[in-house]
Length: 408
Ligand SMILES: Nc1ncnc2c1ncn2[C@@H]1O[C@H](COP(=O)(O)OP(=O)(O)O)[C@@H](O)[C@H]1O
Ligand SMILES: [Mg+2]
Image (cartoon, rainbow, N blue to C red; front, side, top):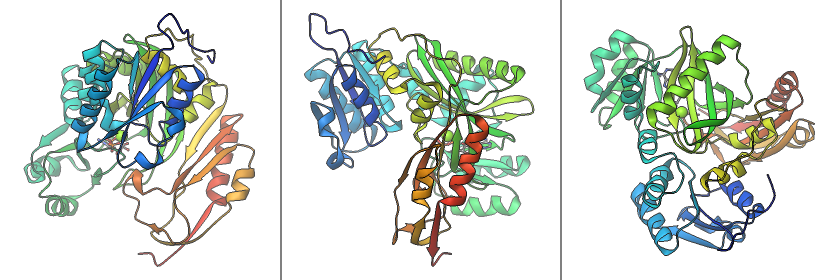
């Protein structure tokens, strides 16, 4: 999959990447390997650290929200039509889909993109298609959900359009209802859902023209309630045949419901007694360096495959089974000021550790872990067997230590 792209009479083909940051860079690297021309759209916040060497032109997003992304994408496309366009993360999904739709470029579809951005629209659509999901209530203000919540405790309260578990919390009892009614009284538009019991998984798939051409299941570890911050992702999870069949049926049902056409899909569910119960879907690149872990697990470059899909190329037959066992692990510390971090060298020397990337160091503040944004970095693991992977995860947790003072 690394041979240069066919140049053709019109010269090399061109990719427009919308949103790069840190985790989107491998798309640019893949495009360079494929011999593509590349332009990219980037936010003001990430502008100074944009990888200028990886694209011939960057367009800077000015202004607020998805509209600003859409405006900049429209400008870039009007200047020159790309052959493929990828929207990287949540704020870029709709901007990218608008341009894909307008220009006839492969993409998830405008319908799928809009649904992906709004958890209440997802619930409504899943319900209409009879897909398994928690009972839910969409309210303008939390006070309207008082009786509904009280009758169904425990429940989960969440905003419609955020991500990374921001604003997502479990309410376990009547006191919790009182407390959240006061604390989140002024928030506009919330979903309240029955709390689904069962282990959490995600499903990542490459889809072309509505057909699944690659799929992976990831097992999650999250913090305990009330918040659900992701602490580890174990790729290449294998269900027994009954559960695998249920996952197959539910995932295909979701793709049909949202009208997914082409691209990368990330879907979250919990495995309850009755089978998989849907949490949410996103038609974009999953976060938490999952594509890196998936690429290692199956032995191919997921980013490159996404670029090929975006250009409308046929992808080669992709692996169906893990050839390795990768995970991403997010070290934690109690709240306070970091005094020191020890064990980085020993962690790096472990044969199954691929990299250690820490965003925080001595003097930095650790806040209570209420969303993904508060985590302090990640470790990428790749092991020869599931058992060795578990050993490596345990080793990292025991070895990489963060000393903190002044917590509370
Ligand atoms: N109805 C629910 N029942 C149980 N856990 C839930 C429910 N909704 C969300 N969660 C937990 O909270 C996490 C974050 O919620 P999610 O809807 O995925 O929002 P986000 O967009 O922030 O990821 C989920 O990954 C899951 O662990
Ligand atoms: Mg989620």
